[in-house]
Length: 318
Image (cartoon, rainbow, N blue to C red; front, side):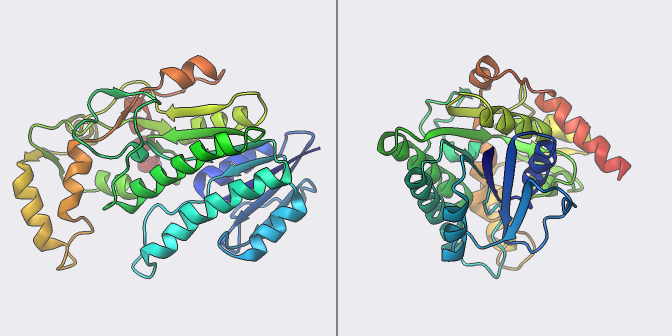
C-alpha cells in the first residue's frame, strides 16, 4: 500500500488531484490544509484521510512522522498576501515549511518528493528573453514575495538533491494555471474593462490547464521520472492577443506613465498594483515545454491560446 501525503489539498489543484486518485487501487491518501473542510465529500472512502493542520506548527510534522509517507506532493503555497498576513508569515509557509518538510521526508525514508513552484521563480528580468528552458537561472525578484519565495524553494530542492540523493524529487514549474473555479491576479486582469499593456513589450503569457497539472503530478507519482520541468501549453499569448480574445480594447502605455500612475493610485487604495508591477509585464518569463513533452507520456491538452479560450467559455457558462 503506497502512502501519499498531499499538502495544500484544499486548493483547486489539490482537490482535483485527490478526486483523480480516489479510484487508484493500492494507495492510501493523507491530505492536509489549514482549511477546516476539504470541499469534497470522501467520508466513505477508507483509503482517504484529511487533517486540517498548519504546516508551520509542530503538530503537522508529528502527523507526518506517524504516516511515514512514501510520496509527498507539496502544493501548499501562498498566492496572494492578504492585508492581515505579514510577509514573514508567508515566508514561513512557503520557504521555511518546505525546508523542514524536505528534511523530514529524507529522515523518514520517503521515496519521492514532488513540489510545484512557478515560472515566477525565474524572475522578471531584462535578460529573460525568448523561450526559457529548465537550465535558465532561477533568480526571483525580492520585491515580489511570490517570485522570491519560489526561487528560494528551487534552491532548497537543488541543495536537497545533493544532500539527500536517495530522495527522488520532481519539480513542476507551471506558467499561469487556468481551469474550473480558478481565481487570482491573472483572472482579475481578465475582468478589467480594458487591457493595459506596456508600449514596446508584448507581455507574453503561457497558460497550462489545471487538469494537465494534475495529470503530470499523478504520472510523476507512479513512475521513475525525476527532475525539474516547465509546465506550459504550446505557444504563448501576448497582452494584445488576450485583449482580442476577451473582445476588449488593448491600450499600450509608456512604462514611465504607468509607473507614475500606480505610485499615486496604490497608496490611495484605488489599485492593488504598485509601480514595481510594470516589470511583470515587460519581462515575463516564457516557459519552453520541450522537456516535459519529451519525458512524460501525458501531453498538454490545450495550447496557451486554447486554455484561455476554454477558461473564458467556462466563465460564460457559470
